Image 1 (cartoon, rainbow, N blue to C red):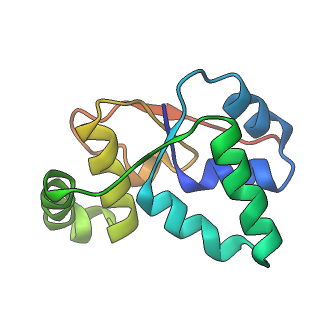
Image 2 (cartoon, rainbow, N blue to C red; image 1 turned 180 degrees about the vertical axis):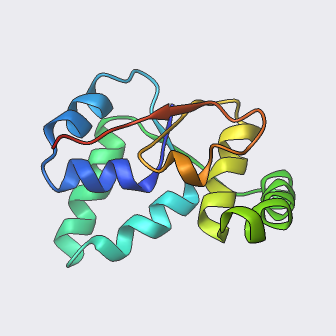
Length: 127
């Protein structure tokens, strides 16, 4: 399962169900984009160290962006930028999930629901 950035942020903010979801998933991955989106949420180098330690300890795979992912993301932007407000980060994350044939876990299904072939696991945070 590939996790959208918002799932990691919920877990970092102490949302128990997000932490449990991550812990109970056997094969965890993120897009390189998620890494780049998450790092600015770290307030200092120690928090970045803790984030990277967590990725390593939980054996997250970080999928790099290659030509095929870039090309597919450009197609998604072309197709959905005006109709659905598709932005670069979401297009790259979706293209990564499609390229690796992984389920995408996100709390923002409205950003991804229109993409044919993308399988979404809708996460609803605790109240």
